[in-house]
Length: 467
Ligand code: SAH
Image 1 (tube, rainbow, N blue to C red):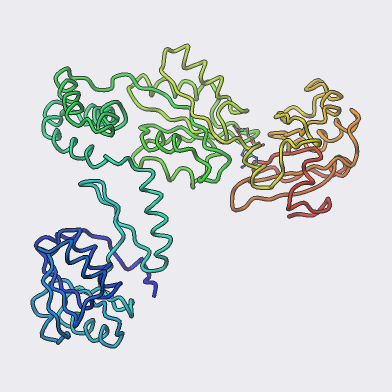
Image 2: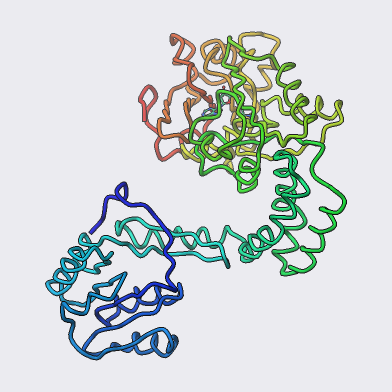
């Protein structure tokens, strides 16, 4: 039975000094007892007989289990601070839960689970670091998945890094009384070579490095800038590197392509600057943005410039990079999934396809109303999939130009708005049809995909329909 998790607070219990009672010795009781034993608890176990798994558990923890081979009675409860009712008899479990609640003793009940006043979460351990996972019983499978996912993500020796930080905490505080310098010092440990040394199990070498740095008063003086691509919007499309850098940022500069689902991954106390940039109302000019990046980096900050998609695809990442380079600022580029590949995946439109499209062009539709913007006949005859960024605004003239340049009137076109997001909208049409249409709503980011591969989409519908 699932509990509404809003009524629960995860806390950590000092189990070594806690007297626990487990009633029942079957498979479920064994699993619950194991969690308590791993946390160092001492258990009294009451059950008329033992299952094979429980016998094995007792052999593994002989000093922590005191077994009483008999049935439970209400008097058993008095001396305990935590009770697990895990017999295969729901009526008995209910009685145990009622007595425990009357005595104000936290109780975990296997069945009926909703009588529990205490949940035993799945835990993931890295030495002193522990992560507790709980869905209130809604889905143990999901919790196991999540645990496996985190297990893969968190370095095995993360706990040693925590131990190292604890060891030097006082001396770092004394050497760097200034909170900013101290934070930079910590960040250099956590993000850099010292952490890597710990993770490769050379703990003593890592401690030496910390001592050297403290002695030389080295903390981060020069900031740096990361130009980070965040993909088309779905946060699952962030790269691991983007996520890591976002969680280390002091200052974050972002524009309207970056939604709240992405921003929530930023470090909580990072300073955030919105620099706008919707079509036709540029909140900040590119020069102002460049200047912001440079100034914050010069002030010693780790600056993260978030960009929709990829920074180097119509993202003006190149201009920002050159400005940083000219100012002598250290910078890093973190690539992202660009709108074209993101939208291709979420709509099932291949960008290239054997015998259908031998290539694909990423183009800007920003100036599609200008005759000189492209060699239009070359585009029309290329046989490539044409992907226009910023193309929805000038869609009508874009289609007219391609038609006049000789592209077939029935060439399929897909318009993908808010690609990869929950409110994605996909419209199928043709060049001829769109060349006569009134302008579409262009307030949402939209991509125009033109070419025969459009019809390969499993979501393809006859032109004019909205999928
Ligand atoms: N650097 C970005 C592109 C920035 S230009 C990238 O690599 O994707 C802004 C244009 O990108 C928008 O006008 C739109 O054409 C496209 N775009 C960005 N996100 C999009 C999304 N989620 N769905 C559809 N198009 C998107």
